[in-house]
Length: 412
Image (tube, rainbow, N blue to C red; front, top):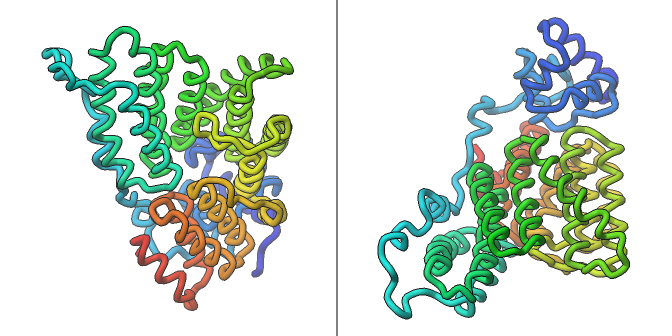
């Protein structure tokens, strides 16, 4: 490669920006990034390795990728083609989320015995969460699109003594919908689901379920690139839970949520290029996880020591610190976590290898992730991005396994 010095690349971007008559703020707005990120790129503090990011910079500046970095490959697709959304398996659930969730129940009282009880609904909610952790989104969509109207009808006609638990089950059902929509790149639907979960949790009188709903909402905002709103949602929870965690008898469930929210803040700051803040929140989460002493799954966050390290890898990749990400990954054993978490870890390992231009290692990680969670890997925006980058890095010699993976993912 002729040009791998981040300072040289940054200086070139600065010159191109000025030639285009743009301020750092203008460029940040055009890329949905922060002004701080642009400043760090131009000073060489924030390396730009991913071809997709280079393409976004080139588009914003009105130049070619090679103008930004002469050694970069040329995309084989137009950006509009490359960014076309992939179809996913949540169509039925999206329809179920549309309109009023139980309109008929407002007009007609159900017949005796036709409304589900908490005992009947509880295992069904647990079952859809298991599908989410396994990244089985088609099955989740079918089950949850039928379950949500049942819960909504039940909560409107149940005896008063059952309503608190039904609201709690309603909150958890909408939380799993939000989680699935985020993972399948349906951020608008995720926000709606998270908002309904928040309302149900408050009606249930369950403040920790409210925080769990905020956790899902923050992830929806992250996916929408609304980082200010995501940060507000997470920081508001940390502000309340932080002082409570200082008590020696703080329940582990509260500690888990506090740790999970710190991981959200780490992700937000990494996407914004804020290294110090990212590392601060990772360390905060590590301290909380050490206090818990085990991997847990409170409120289906899978928070614990292992998940903290998974986030340490992911945020290092987001910051462009591929070497650090791979160093951390060597000491991580994610096998005790869900298939979804394991596959996401391997995807981040693949992203790190792609930043280092290790095509073979990146493909191997992606194929291993695909075995664990094919629906997730085929549709996740990061996996599709890294496959495109790997194809471009390979030039005329695209490895056959990568070609076949791209075909399975419908990447032309």
